Image: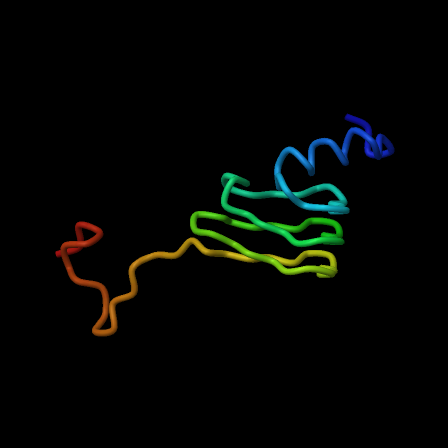
Length: 91
């Protein structure tokens, strides 16, 4: 799809975010699933937005994101006393 195909982009955004009203995303846009992202009315994501939606991400109405915004729900185990020896095969 051409970057100038605003109607096509609008259809993709509507398919991705579902019930959003007036959502606009400027490519490139990255996400894990897309199905766990909810955006409100008049949502705008500028260039290079990344939302790793391993868990639910809810964004309210009239949210305008600057370029290079990153929202991560993914993580890794955190060990307060250091990494146990058996986690990565380290003995």
